[in-house]
Length: 254
Image (tube, rainbow, N blue to C red; front, top):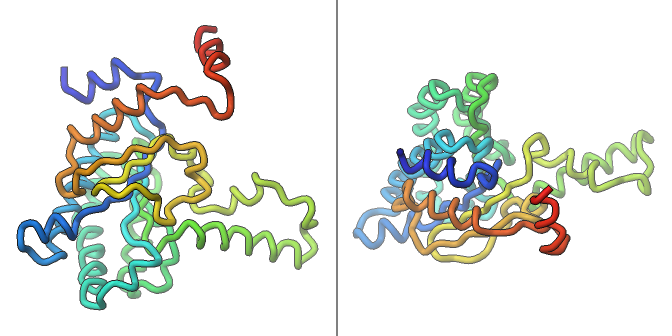
């Protein structure tokens, strides 16, 4: 039995519905090999492909990856430019493959700062894959968790200004409905590669009850075996959501 089927068979009730990943370590991977940083980012695209395949094989509903943060504009201009080119090339090469595997792809974040050619290609890719149902693959690009919450709060503020909503009637559900991933289940499992142990302004609201998994593996080296190790770790945890262990165990036994 393939490893993906073994994972599914052993832990069918504990497979995460939604996995979120910070893909860290591309630059260090390249530096170790005395290659330019962009070579690490190109190698990282192959890891994305492997993880998408794993998600499809194991029945995961949603995968969200952090590709470019609002803070990444601070990087050297040359590197940012090369990243934009890589993003465009990856869309051109990968979207058809995603569509063939029934994957819905979309981008969340503030697109206005991207070159118009890239904005157009993003819109085309989203339209092309919009009816696919096997996996929702979301790329967070020029995204920040604080930005996400701010733009949702701003929309509620506009509704109050227009007299459509009273400020003291605003609920968590209203704010959440304005967030970028409001139509998806909140992430069950968050993975960060590269040895760092922080969330770096990624999905701040959505990660409230997510299980965290950190690994020293650099993103270009993160393959199927690494992904299944993260799933095994997730499957071994008891998710209580504020309840006691006894309550959870009682509920499972019913």
